[in-house]
Image: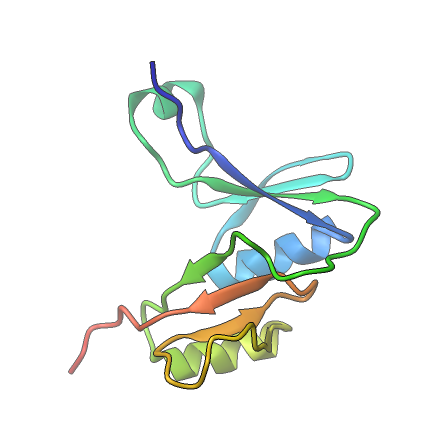
Length: 131
């Protein structure tokens, strides 16, 4: 007996806005909208594909009334694939992200950021080919 990791759900005030932000960050697209929920992903999941092999999870943004109050215990890490970490941080700032301090200290090789609703995520080392 096995389970699959199929979705990561993010509570938020504005699912459309947050889904649009993360679509730009990850080059995902909206794959489902219903009520107060927006799901995005790099593929449209089918039961057959999920049963056959582990596939990348989708992100689901669900409207909730309460606000975020503390540092997330679970967060996303992203790695730029065609530019430097610094260039990606600049791009993400332009999309509405902010840099934030969660006590990571100054000697880290990643950058802690927050999405437009304050959910922390890390920008890690670049995966771009090095000249």
